[in-house]
Image (cartoon, rainbow, N blue to C red):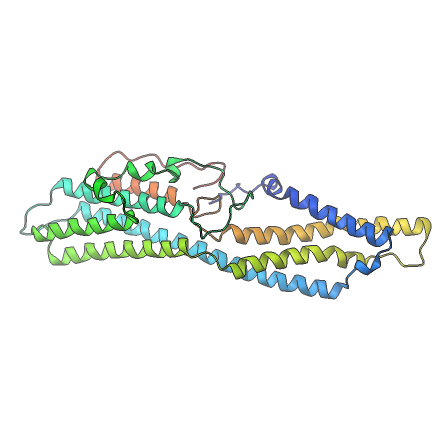
Length: 342
């Protein structure tokens, strides 16, 4: 997630300078062919290109809204996990029994530690590269500048260091370790209920909280494993490039020199037409950036600069739980990297 001050002109230009050079060259070629070589047949009337630009604008607006909807849903799901985790820590720390045996503090700590392990396991699974996702590209709004970071859930150690010894063997070789951790949480609660340490009401309430965690995990996995519809993403990119290609043809049609001009008058008009090139490039660049911004929000869990900062959220939850329950030393919060929170 890019923080305030993270988007600077130089960072945006660094991701689009090749495009700017290419579209500037294309505009100059069109001006040269039309005004110098007199290939007037390449010019297109302005109204059709203007209509195309309007259509592309509406399409990109729809694409941006759809992509942001995925990003915002992912953020809301992790907001629910934050609130549920605090409720879980509060419930575990303050569980009381009226007539049964007292809950062993070791079991209380296990329930908290296993939950922290589940958070980090889920983050690691969501950060794993999916074959269904989009191809990574070197663009300010869509690339991973930091790799191999344990704290950013890019290596197995990010979850292995949190796994309680009681669960290590059970997790070995399992396809969905995060789901298994929730199952083992339920098994522990069942044992407490059978021992009389949890009455039916408290047991049902705790199991309902586990159900909410499983529901949030499933929704996150749905976003992760369902790629953004390619018919929307790819067609939007094609339409954008079609407009970028045709816009210079409309500019030269609008500002072409009359046939009767000769000599210095014609060259003066050529200079006037070439002066419109920066404005054409600017319009093309705006459409290019708009399309890239929408593409950057298609997969909100891949660990890129615009994604939901699930690693920072995991660390925040761990700090809250350890400070709340007194189990373990709270780690420091994750610091932004180049004005980006991961």
